[in-house]
Length: 255
Image (cartoon, rainbow, N blue to C red; front, side, top):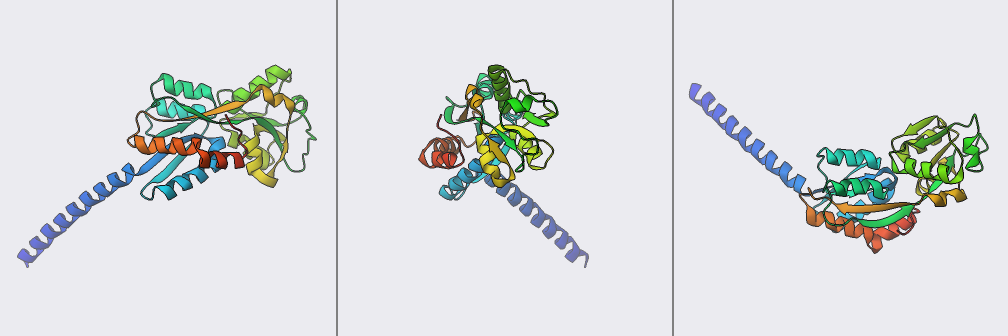
């Protein structure tokens, strides 16, 4: 019995070692086939669709997205967060990444976007123009100035002379939109594409002063990527005909 028990222990240990080794190898294999894309929050729906197209063309690859405010994403990359591709909602945050040698080669401009006022479907505050956002008592939500949509808001205020006193400043444009769709704000300044994506959850109000702040979106493969060929292929897909059609359908304009 003692001999049998000892043999069983040895067999169990050998089996456990084999499984651990195999599991670790499998994990490394999976990681080598995962493409991590850091992208501005306003790109969420269109990039998810582009990601599906990329996966369909590369059966062995899984695209993993991290969406957020461009300034937050750059900060994460500067702190060493592992990623393969970065797409910013403005050139300023991409310049931060290139200045720190985080981007491989030259970034590619792939889209532009402009601001639009989003209000609840019933528009309880009766907002009809940018000037209305400066009226006392109107609950307005905007992006923080370090976020591209916040920087654009600031440019529009300066160009128009309208001063907005927001009830809150959010770290991403999706957070602003959420405040409007949940009834926590009378209005929010978001992108044209966000209004389109929200459908009947909001009413969009265009305003001529938005032309003072058109955001250009650049994308680049990252220098620290372990999948540089795949990263460049993703960039090429975004900038190519198929990616451009998806972005146009989402309301983005050409760069």
